[in-house]
Length: 290
Length: 304
Image 1 (tube, rainbow over the protein chains, first blue to last red):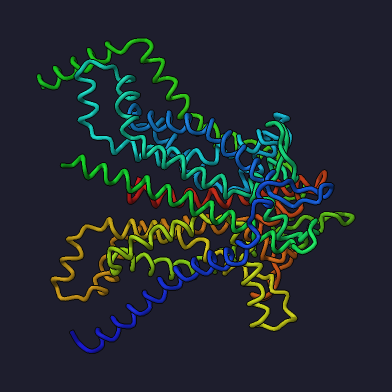
Image 2: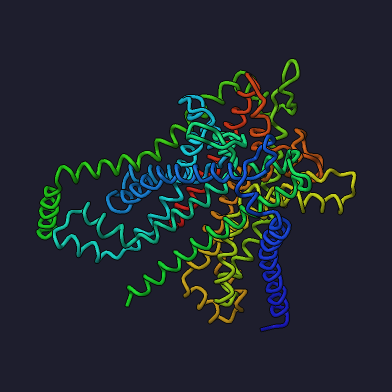
């Protein structure tokens, strides 16, 4: 190896290290900066009170409830739909026009940005179907949005189920449907759970689509036909409008850091549990191989 | 031939055994699967139904190439060229940064990193992907904008094209890193071994053999990153300053297409509101072109 190659190699290596260090330090910077500024303000009062000028409270309970509403309703529709779709794609579909157009549609859905979903939800669910800006409109919009996430991840999980399981069940005389529900789905269950966790992450982090369809009012949604701001929408409102807070010492900025901290901690929990179930699957597979 | 025929017969017999309820079940599955197609078709139709008429009313040329956006003046003017230019400039610059840093990080993860470190770094990058975009936007407001003010002088507002580019290039990193790393790992190990056996160094092998072999996957990751950057809304709105003007420098305030939609949505009425949906249609067309390119790229490589 001549001198020149050695020098170039060294320089490249250093460059690669710098780039990686940059990626990691940006992540650490964002997480540490926000949490260190916000964690002081995250307390029971913040998490358990309304946002109301009348009662002089500034809490984020309504936003937590709105977010939970959206998570629950969205998963209720999108999980069965996603799982059934991936069963069709992996167990029934034969290569051809139908399959490729379904695949293309799913890819399109995955590539459409959330603002377009928001516009569509606004025209279709809010105005045409007259659901108004409400939890229902928001959840239906999010359902379409998370569908590709659930389908892809579930498909991957279904594909890892060994063929011999299926063959064994079929050989015992079970019908194809019975085989799928009693053998294939149960052995892919951890993968399906991590697919669901992934979509919870997307729902929690979503802002543009929910702002247009579920409204940005800081109120407590009492039914699925009422609007309500989610945590992300409230964070956007706080950060850009800097409203007056009904508290002697706290400022809007403090509260924004607090909400951002709550969101980062939620993301951390969601990601860790997805990674955990992911490793669980891998370990199981290695176990199976032997 | 005989055996084949035999198999054919067996297959037919198996098929005959499927009961009506099995058939019904399959039909139900097909129905669920085709809902995705229905969703794409419905989204396209409703978006165009709501947003396309205004474009023709204002005039396609006037809508896209006019530089003046004054929806509330009399007579109103609906030119979105500044937003198109802002979106495209921000995306190109952000992707240029993001691609270099992202691919290098992917090389590190796939080739250089010790296993234990890669095990820690990968979830970290997933976390970067999972952080909500409003949090990025808020972080930009709190950190990037004061920083720009400090560097370029206090007379700059800080909210600028530059801030958008910085935030976007960070936000697309995980997309580029994940897909690039996957395609680098998919390169057959024999390629690397062959190149090493011919006397190249580890990095020569990476840059001259493995990256070219993983080319289509890496390009796909870049196209995906372009889509992300172009469609990103909330984070961009929070740091862009949102004045509708042709960007003169990296420090000028800009409004992107996505920003153009959300900022005025709440108080717009009539033709003004229609025009916002018109912006949506233009954005949608851009995104669909990016998607089609991506689809072609992925088909070539069959990543699935």
